[in-house]
Length: 137
Ligand SMILES: [Zn+2]
Image (cartoon, rainbow, N blue to C red):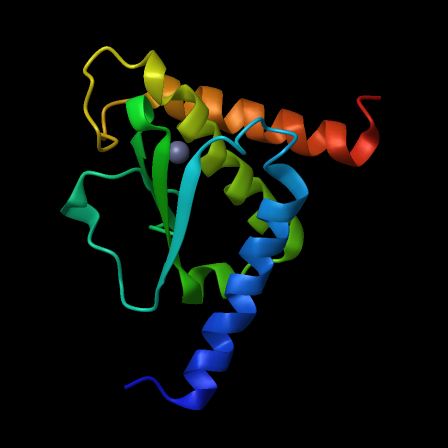
């Protein structure tokens, strides 16, 4: 049973994620996808085989052939972030959705040995955020 205070805490962070989805999903051409955001308050397992940023802030699972993805958000971690950092993390996870099909292994869960995908996701997320903020100048 979640206390009302904890539920309010979770709802507040959910609203931040939902605001980012409303801001960005159309621009990223992700409206055709079914993307589920799920929220956890316990510590995410590091051995789940999923992508991690900043100690399991978020994990993204992509089922590209069916245009479905699930992003697991660690609520206490995102609560610690200011809006700009959270937007970057949010964008980074969406980049994984777009990049997943580039993988040769066909795995449905992001593996750990993909530094190239991490780097491309990182650069693209920063690029999108910069263009949105500065108009590409
Ligand atoms: Zn990543």
